[in-house]
Amino acid sequence: MKFSIQLSADYPDKSYGGDRVYQDMLAQAVLADRLGFDSVTITEHHLMNCLMMPAPLQFAVKIAAHTEQIRIITAITILPIRDMRVFAGEVVVADIFTEGRLLLGVGRGNFPYEMENLGIPMHETRERFDESLAVLRALLNEEEVSWDGKYYKFGPITVMPRPMNPGGPQMMMAAVNPDAIYHCARQGYHVQTTPQPGNEAFLRDQVAAFNRGKDELGGSGETSLTLLRVGFMCHSEMEKRERIQMAHSFLGRFENVYGGPGFVDNGIVRALPRRQPIDQLAKSLLIGMKQEMIDKLAAYDEMGVDRIIMNVNFGCDPHETMDSIQYFAEEVMPHFAKDDECGIVAA
Image (cartoon, helix red, strand yellow):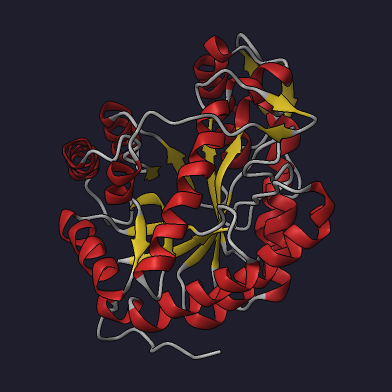
């Protein structure tokens, strides 16, 4: 099983400065590269301080310039808000500038506050995404592409420069519903998901759907399933309780804009009360000490999850977050490394 750090900006205090937020995230990427993580993951969100990253491809290029081998995943870039004729060229250039380390995660957008303020009604996002994806794939695979659809109409064009590899970088699809996961895997896409209710039975359904689609695809078996979780390595029970409380508050802000009322004040997302009891939430988070973390991850590994993305940015001190990343790499990752993988390099 592989591991990734989600570089998701949490920016509750404007006085801290966006420049410092992104410096912290870049430092996490550099550390993750040195410690042997498989990848770092970049979210995309606009007009809010929660998961704040309006320029994922630009940040991917910045990370590549400061790291040596770590993969860089956009999870996800939002297709319906873009013109694919422009975005296709940006993807090709980002793939070149990241020296082939880009894994392009795409999705339709799931924050109503964000999408509707960008002029995209939520009820249109699925249809817009499907057509946008088809246009993007055509532009990356073919020359002199024409299109006559609902949202795109254009005559023959060729995106330049051409991709380094046929079809451009590998793609990852964001999907939660098991049926959607099945169809993505069956088409050969990498899949990122999350068992949002924290329900193990639902997660098993997601994994089973992915495996069914992958089996029907056949071929080389390169398609992978990635699971996103809020996570943090702790040194004591007291620290664990503090981190769980912080995650509980963070998720109150997240749920406000994810299917909630979308209360945002001058770019700051309000934290709303959560119905889920905090002790129930704690069971579904990857927050804990060494052995507890290993046991939880072993269950995911046994199910067949290929990669875990840990969201470590939910309000913790930047130095403590760096310590958590290193602690996880040195004490947990070796338990899931294959015999032929390199060891961990201490900072």
